[in-house]
Length: 312
Ligand SMILES: Nc1ncnc2c1ncn2[C@@H]1O[C@H](COP(=O)(O)OP(=O)(O)O)[C@@H](O)[C@H]1O
Ligand SMILES: NC(=O)OP(=O)(O)O
Image 1: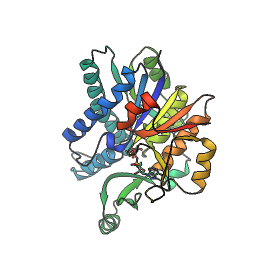
Image 2: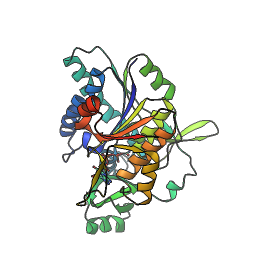
Image 3: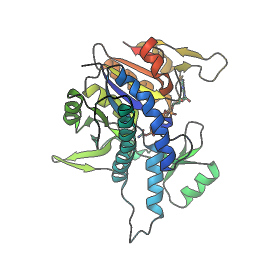
């Protein structure tokens, strides 16, 4: 068996600027062309992905429908729907990319439930941005109309925010593990997984969106992955990002990262959760390594270890 690699896909792997299904499928096709390099390299692949834009857009579509004849679904069901639709796009694109290369492997998407703590303080303080961007004026109109909480998202505009509890454990971990062990490519924990709470031994969906970086880390840790790769819009994590003296981080230790976090080098809501997830994975196993880089850099990562490589 090759290295077991959990890959978390960032937003640009699915939605660049056009939210039509066709454009997202096209973006996912390009993404698959990059991901398949790991499989050609002999690695075992587990793919996770975000759903922030898609689940927010689906919620808007639901709210526009006739509330009697076609009532809106709760957020946990909408997360499940995006897990299914994005999982299908990825499954289809990866399967086609494998067929072109005569690689005989199957790809399966697991609708994954992720247990969260119903007492998680995140339920009282929504922070997870979903759906489209608004100007400040537009967001204030939405707030006045009672359309929920809106916050500024990493200097990119205003977005609706929903609770984002921390993942505690992945319910279908044995199924995912069995599929990986028997040589299948698995897409799991999409959109951070469906948030569920456990009450008297029963699982119940709860309205929230889990951060996919934290859910992916949980998946990588529970699968005892060799490597956790976070793919995003930059080849490297930087200190002094976007400043004239910015410096890329190539090999970095957990202790260096803690220092940079104290210096506020990583933007909350964008790079910070990725760095925190990488640290948690590295700390969860003796020889664990995490890498933060871009999709486009996968070839260089495989052949010359390019990217931000995080070790103990
Ligand atoms: N210190 C940093 N180093 C590199 N990128 C950073 C840093 N701080 C913020 N960023 C930004 O964070 C982005 C990644 O966050 P985001 O786009 O929210 O993630 P995702 O790829 O999961 O959708 C990068 O593309 C970059 O623009
Ligand atoms: N669920 C989640 O974290 O999605 P995004 O990465 O798209 O925000």
